[in-house]
Length: 229
Image (cartoon, rainbow, N blue to C red):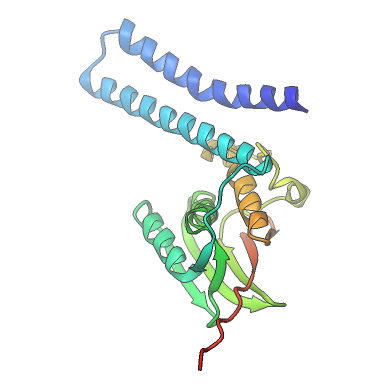
């Protein structure tokens, strides 16, 4: 199992490294116009960012799965977190319409604010990334069976039925040329699963090809504080 994981990580690291090395060699060995130099330097920066994201995500997953990730537990209201995540995503797109539907007054859970932000950033960013033609991204907060539930719904291409059982596995990628062209580390949803589990919750997905996807995270509701007389 460990050798298989090392092999997978090595393969994932090799792609951005090859891009960086190839472009650097062109810059060093060929006389290029300034515009072409800028283009190659931009591409090198993007590949370096991709490499950094992959390493950070991999280290996060390793800590979480080994039970070594530290959490700072406190009462957390999910609404401000969702608003900040959406504000950040809006800066990168003008073809998506975001909306937040709050259908409960109980939006507090016991959790780690920063890790929850990471969880919802991954889900909302995926909703944007995998619907490149735009559309609605809807976040819905509601209560169900003693849990606070958060849906993140998109109007993207959806996920094939045969891929759904594997979608939260490390490095799993849907075997689809359009999705592979979009890129990513293949670890974002694994991180979502691990953070949800650490909070006593879970994440599930419902999806159909060409009809979008809905990811649902369920958390135990924080106890209601008792009034002091």
